[in-house]
Amino acid sequence: MALDLTLLTTQAECDEALADLAAELETYQHRNDNLDYAASQAGRTLGDVTARLAGVQAEIDSYTAMLNVPNMLASLRKQTESRLRRANDRKDNLAERGQARTGSAAFLAAVDAEQVAAQVATLTSAQQAVTTRKAALPA
Image (cartoon, rainbow, N blue to C red; front, side, top):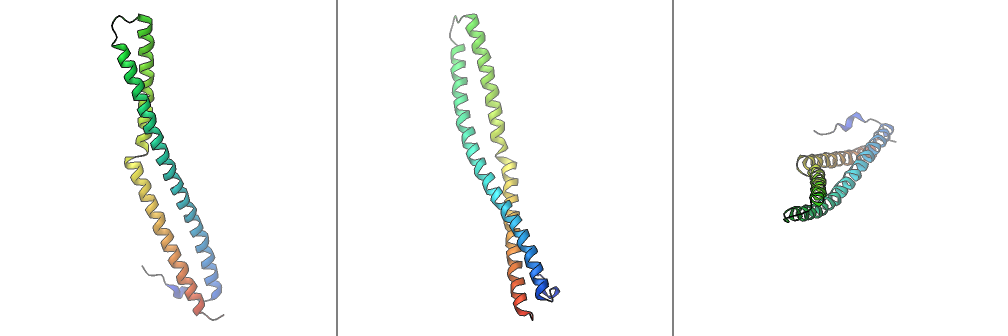
């Protein structure tokens, strides 16, 4: 939809529109910066979660192997089973954190970023059009 620049009849109206557009553009640019930061953090967090999952899996494998040792003392078996349960809980928690950074959450973040980028482009184009209109109006 084309903007109707004929609605702006004076340079003062153009100045007012430009000030409002600049304020709105600044808001979207901050939002875009925040989305970039969030994406960066999510990437680092996902990498950290992946590394921690590998460590917990190694721990689980170790406890599982220990439980397969024949004639283990009952107290050591109980302690190892308890540690295995806790390691499995940590693994589940880490997996949930990793899933929050992928799938639909990641897709929706990309949609949000695309919306912001489109809004910034629209506002920038409007600023350029108003500036051109202002130059064509009498002082």
